[in-house]
Length: 119
Image (tube, rainbow, N blue to C red):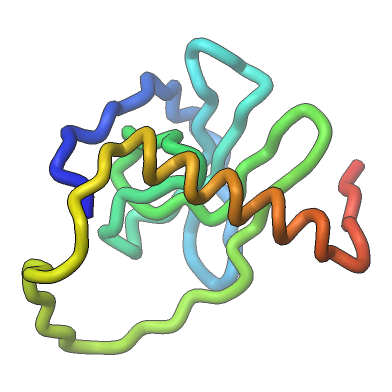
């Protein structure tokens, strides 16, 4: 669990839209790096993006970098869910969380049997 404040990136939301995984999505471009483009939906009010690219008003479904894409594979709705604040475990910093995610991503890339390239 991390109790740090999550940094927000500055995005330019453009007028281009698309439907991805059955959800209406809007396109946004990172101000500091226009080579990073995301597609997000406000139909899922969970403002999350991979790799700490936060700051949008919904869930990022696709991230486009100069050399590759990252797509969300599936969205499943569970209905009513009661969430409780964790009482066990250890507090970690956001930096530690991202390091753990980086190690996990590197492991998955090493174990991958194929890579899909978009043009």
